[in-house]
Length: 156
Image (cartoon, rainbow, N blue to C red; front, side):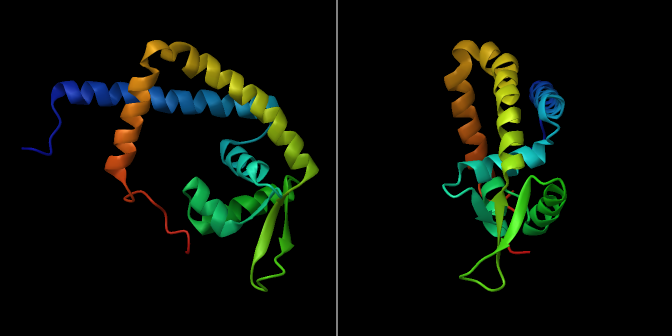
């Protein structure tokens, strides 16, 4: 049957899956130990930090990181309680709010980034070697194959 995997394809998939999960976990542990920031928090902090005015709308954050709008909203509420972000009114849209990076959030993001970058270098870049172009091309093909199949509904 055309939709079945060969034994070799299963071995390659299992290897890739285990590597990806362990890499994600190693990066998450480093974030937590260096700054007390979770991976989801870091993703949002970095997005806000890259924004020219250090703020964004929930729907824009959701679209940027590939989450549902409701998930982002709940995460922002937790981050707001920790003082990492704050919500402010959007003058141009009475129903809308901005999510802004606070000074504490910026400090947490910067502390997390140093360790996160070092971990990416240690666990990924340093072992990638001459395979960088192959991995980049492979990643592009996988993303192309997925297309919009895994895109969240950011309006819900």
